[in-house]
Length: 381
Image (tube, rainbow, N blue to C red; front, side):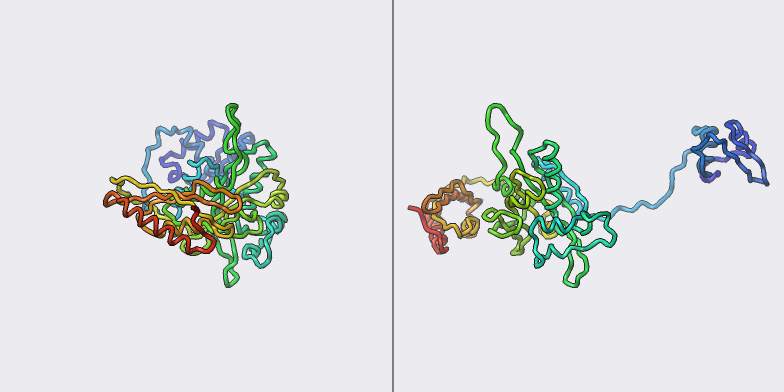
């Protein structure tokens, strides 16, 4: 008892203190007592409770304080955890709410997303003793959980949502054994903000979603490229595959109406999911300082006819690759009539000096010369 309590209490004092609150004390031998607990003290069930009673009656102030002695070890630096925290901070600062779902789903979720047996996501890890049929498989992607979050909120009157989740997915490796990987998924639905009497608030669209993905890429210095793709649960024409270092890391687009109907959702949803493991390996933990340019930028606009089957992102990336003096390439107009016309705004800038008109003309000529080599791209005159 003295070791637990941290103070020495004599046997007589010990017996007197417990006897004063109705405990029965019977000495058995030297240093040993038989204690009977009053029937109304239901809170006393073990020896530690007796020690607590004695300490309380003896007086906590009479027990000398002692600092515990032990070895303190610094936890190893987990860069992956810190990077995930920074990503969460980015999404929260962008107006998103984080959700945390169970890592289980059902075969119905695979069917709801039209996942075929040939798809790697169909080969889910089964649970031997599932709580219910709805939780019989380990999830292979995060989107089903987020759509359930949307359905839950819509049923309670919350129609404007920006939510994200970072969590593990479970797939089968080449040898059939389960593998765990971190994914990130985020979605937009409803209107960009609450109603305001002075103006009509617009609905979210695909470009809001793509804007978040681009901001994510720029924030963490990750060179993500966007290429037209296909997903069984995303609307054709909006489906975009995300590539990093030549490897596909995810997809984004507008969720198909038939998929939304299966979750009881009656408004448009724009979603993106990425393999976070690949992103973390390329993500810089600390950014690098770039010198503020001392020389003015030069802006030039270009307009091209671009066939529908030619991805605009391909044209944009081609322009960026022509010269290191090209600092940014943006799209400021798309016009469709007989042909699709796309207008690009290109910013030229040098850190070493002011660009001359002659140098700008050479760069303009190079851009036009390289782009007309792409089949389906012609200069608009």
